[in-house]
Length: 113
Length: 108
View 1 (cartoon, rainbow over the protein chains, first blue to last red):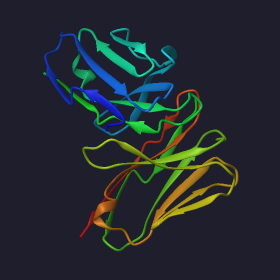
View 2 (view 1 turned 90 degrees about the vertical axis):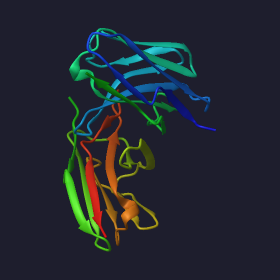
View 3 (view 1 turned 180 degrees about the vertical axis):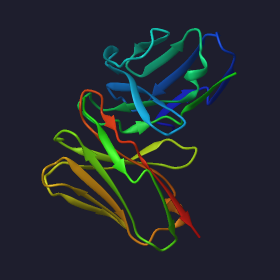
View 4 (view 1 turned 90 degrees about the horizontal axis):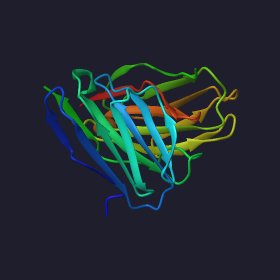
């Protein structure tokens, strides 16, 4: 069974569109994260949720809105997509918020045309 | 803010050669983690170091945490083509800062 699964794996869309990425973990972890990895491979935290509560909200544009319906799910909705949003987005989870991200999803490769 | 830098950014080695990547933090870390990301893959947690001066080994990989807990290193002995990928260190802060990564290529 996949520990952290995110969908879709690939997302190709046009500038200005709105899209969502879904993430689910079956590990019973309390904390989930969204990371953005750019073309230079830098991994940057975007959001962190602990038991459905937003803990970290880095300097991310308001166009990005995370939602956690329960502690096993953390979705990411992006409005008005821009060229600079092209990246790989990783979902991750950890047992608790004071523990490092232990499991990552396979990533969603977002390409903006 | 807290920064975690890794050097080198890129490294090409011949199969069988050794490889080392260094991680330096601007602040003292309570612990440090290392991850490996294969090309096209996702980061995979390798190990966590907690104690000052700690050294841990995983087969051909040796991880070290500095005495001052501001730096760490990962050494791979006799690299193999399966070692190809990007190696990241990460340190805790509010946001678990990931290092800039070292991309390793192993030439057969």
